[in-house]
Every structure is written in structure tokens, then in C-alpha cells.
Length: 116
Image (cartoon, rainbow, N blue to C red; front, side):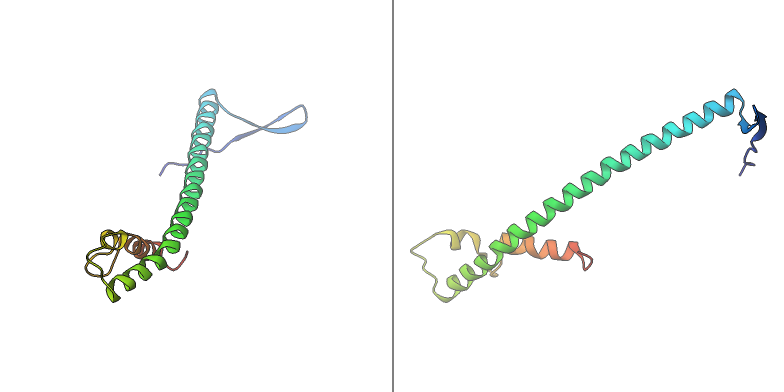
């Protein structure tokens, strides 16, 4: 790695200052612009993460609310199947007793991890 440039200290009007060449000044400004751009991107990504977290929490709440009713319908269908009355149970409940809501809830629990 290259040597870091050492600033040239000067005194102007009794005050200590640092002198830069035009090239060093342009590099300094370009570096500040890059950092500013990166900061803006990080801020946007942070906002996206917050919105995604909110969406995920809302989705988890929705799935959790419907998961219990799906289990109740599955239990009802298993206890007294009525083939003559097709309805939500016949279309939602799969042969293994699972449903889309329950599968999504399980997926969310697996992917969310213990830190949530």
C-alpha cells in the first residue's frame, strides 16, 4: 500500500493551516462526494430494510391469525368429512392436513430465526 500523504502545515495570519496542491484538493473533494453517495445509498437501503421488516411483521400477523382457523377447519374436516358439501375445507386442506397458510407460517418461522 502506498504511503499516506503528509499535509504541509503553514501559518496564515497567525493561524495554523494545511496546504494542499490543486490535485490533492480535487482528490479530497472527490472522496467526499463518494462518501456522500455511499451514505445516501446506505440510508435508502436502511429505509428499505425497515419497510421490509414492517411488511414481514404484518405478514406474520396475518398468517398467525389465519393459521389457527386453518387448523380448526382441518380438524373439523378430518373428524367429519362431508364429501357432498365441497367448500373451503375441501379446497384449502391438503391430504396431509397442511394448508397454504400453515406452510407460509412455517416458512416464516424457519427463515426468521431466533433473533426476531
